[in-house]
Amino acid sequence: MVSDSLDPVVFGQRLRHQRKRAGLTLEALGKLVGSSASYLSQLENGRREPRLSTVNQLAGALACKPAELLSAAAPSRRAELEVAFARIQDDPLYQSLRLPYLKPSARLDGAALEHVVTLFGRLRDLTDGTARASSGHDTPPGVLGARAANAAMRDEMRRRDNYFEEIEAIAQGALEAVGYTGPAAVSERHLTDAAAHFGFRVARVQGLPASTRSITDIANRVLYVPQRNATGGTRTSRSVIAQTLGHFALGHREPTDFATYVRQRVEANYFAGALLAPEASVVALIAEAKRNHDISVADLGEMFYISYEMAAHRLTNLITRHFGIPIHFQRSDHEGRLWKAYENDGVLLPADVDGTIEGQRLCRWWSSRQAFESEDSYELHYQRTETVAGNFWCVTHIELGRDRGDAITVGTVDAMSHWFRGSDTTRRATSTCPDPACCRRPPDDAVQRWEGKAWPSARDHSGFVSGLPTDTVVFSPCPGVDLIDVYAFLDRQTGLGRASAG
Image (tube, rainbow, N blue to C red):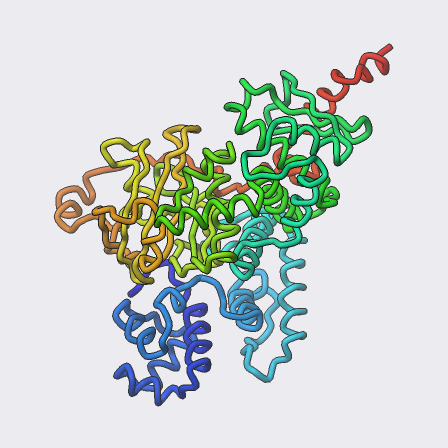
């Protein structure tokens, strides 16, 4: 089989979508791949799981990439609803209603299906405070909401090639207002003037609560940020100011749900990149580098005095829109667990059965993990990888930070790699993930030696399970923020606490 985590229902939906797009009947497709129509029907209805060789044959016959069949995302909103409805009817809470099985056939109205799925989700959230995820573990409903919000935002970013024209325009307007003409980095004076343009004064302070990156006193129009030596340097300090300004520049209001919270974070981070690395200046730099086959994330970071991660994000914002080059981005830890990811080049990201990528583990043969094994893991790691979804070129930078640091990876399809610095790398690897035999199952000889003779104790990865602190989700518009500390900090800064006590 392809993978233990493959959802046959989603695979069937994607197979049906690609078959209809190709204008083929089950019989016609069966003749092309040497399978019976009944077998293909079982695949499309989620009753059978395909082998990897079958996936490759089907992709060839349908003129699509294997990744388009193996993706964990449903191919359309209707298909997404049908998959959700199938899972709902397997849910113990639904089964406790003792309703007969209802097949989501074409005769079932789409609006009715939308209502049923939405209402059941609300019913599940209103039960005893837990919901049963597809893995069988009890998960707080807020966490499920966060996972769904992340997946929805990532889908929108893919559809838009991660380019938000309206945010670019707002950032450009602010830069024009403070006299920035480019092409150099935005100066500290430009940044503080931009804050003043939006009506704020920047104050660098000590003692900012540990749960915050910045605090904005809206009443007194003061933006409090940590002193430079407390934030990891000037680059980090600049990004914190720009990200905070983004919320006000974009007219954000206090989020009331996870979807709004996730969108606001993405938009504010996008605004920060657009403000600190202006579109016209970045495009000019990439164009010159492309002429020399020397596009580099590191150069963007140095030119605009921003972090490697922000430079990587900025590349994903602009390179497809302006140069037609597909791209992918990943942030992962030294164990290969994903924190963030974006792709529009078909790279196959590991995903849970519900489409969640956060906390999933990348293939150990990918650049993101191999970088930690290289002789100098803090040098840029260039690599080509042959996968079931195609061949990709990547560059990985290990950003110092928590534990052993996180890997920031940017890559593209191999056919486009010649535009990038490091495309002449001789490092090559092969990944057959999500096939468990690739890197998730120990070698047979090791199993024979140690099965039943070892008892490893796993490290606690509870952060990936809980998602966000549950004690602050309910009471704070900003998940994870301790409002007691925040308000105490503001009282100290304004003297209001002492006045009240008096």
